[in-house]
Amino acid sequence: MNRNDDQLCFTAVNEALQVISGKWAFLVISQLYYDTQRFNQLKRNLDPISIKSLTDILRHLEQHQIIHRQVIPTIPISVEYSLTEKGKAYRTVLLQMRQWGERWITNPDE
Amino acid sequence: MNRNDDQLCFTAVNEALQVISGKWAFLVISQLYYDTQRFNQLKRNLDPISIKSLTDILRHLEQHQIIHRQVIPTIPISVEYSLTEKGKAYRTVLLQMRQWGERWITNPDE
DNA sequence: CAGGATCCAGCAAGATACTG
DNA sequence: CAGTATCTTGCTGGATCCTG
Image (cartoon, rainbow over all chains, first blue to last red; front, side, top):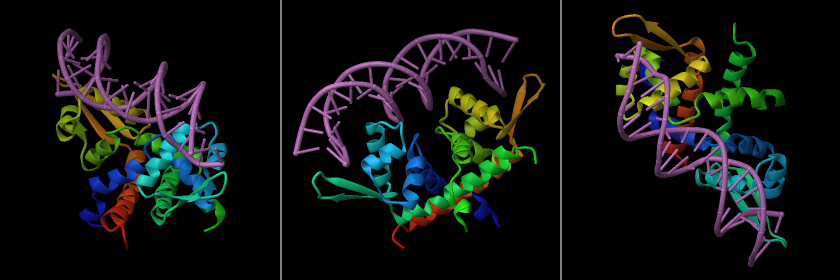
């Protein structure tokens, strides 16, 4: 590993940080990993999230192309949210966080 | 990779997220990776950070045992900040973020 | 040099009411 | 069902002044 491999690129890391900024982004991504979900389904699973917070974070993730929003023109309308490839790839970051967390929280003294 | 390897553990991931919450934590960790640094040295390198923001984030990282604070009783006093092992290990998370960022920002369409 | 204390603006996020 | 609109509050982060 040379110095370049080791350096952090501000732009790249910052983009990654913005994706999970806020209180709920990580949980939304977790929810969508295994299933496409509709709005109210997400709301139930993320209880006690407010409608506003949920819509805000969904818009945020959509702008960053982490999730895809598909409107299904039934009556009443329904909207499905799913992870994009970019969003699915983000899981490697979250898994690395989990690893670090487990290593240093569960067994902090080893 | 079985399902368990793939699942995100809320507590572990959340701890990892709290570490880099806020605007400056990531940059402080970057700064300290190669060198121990004193307060004003950090302040210069992180310009335009305010004194308050810097002290806040240093306290925050110290509480999470990411950095170590050592007072050196010279006159005037000087204080050295360095990464703990836990803090150094966090770099794997940031490097994973960099990788993801470079893959999906620099070449978003591949 | 390395902060502590105080004040304040701006944004995040919750509660509530309403709509196609 | 899936939101939008509005109001309100709590916290983040910057500016300024002060200190051992």
